[in-house]
Length: 327
Image 1: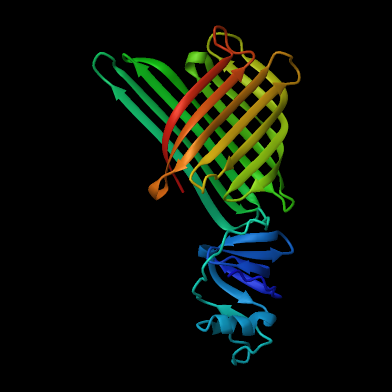
Image 2: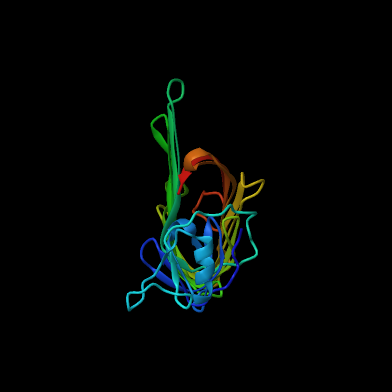
């Protein structure tokens, strides 16, 4: 059962030693919701909680509900009475009911948290056709308090009869500072190489203002926009540089009893000092959780460049079947 009794002066110590103070408003087998004056409602995974320290109004109730809890010594060596706090060292979690989604938790991350995903595909054909394909992509995120670092990238290298047919890679990196209002400021840059589109190196980056419209295990939606500078270095034609505006959209959601996860990631750029440069990339797919942290996915990548290299097409689409691992 969820506990929603408020306590005064509550404190949580996380697994890495961080101390968070506020009011514990809900606890269950998987999480603790702590209302703070500095970060709003903070959600803390139960596995990351080393101990809970409740205020005086909760000491007696905690002692009754958790008979194995030990009381905290006070300065004169006696045990705390009902006007002192009780530290819960270990409790048996109660069964969790249906997931409560009404609380919109703060984007503040207690301690440090790593998450990521890697996908890899390799194929080799020999005989009448001598062909090999290598596809790899990754996504890594690090969170600490209000700060986030995010990196993702992809590599594709194909040969046909020992001749290269595909040679391209891309990487995107961003630092974000999130605020309690769920708005955030960020700085980002991206690099891209595509040998068979005559693109030696494309570099683009700038600041953005973003908003975490939704952020939970079940639903994520974020939008970003800001100024950007674009530089393109080609093999066989003059380079192109421009300044303009960029935008991002990131979405994923668990559906069908959390068995499917549709997602869409979108990046766009339009030059403001030139009328003939619009750049667009999107990745749309469905991910399927498998056993042991492994995932499968089908994905459509769509690329549009209104002013590509000479003899390169303006539109490029790729369909991928992916097998990956996430943590």
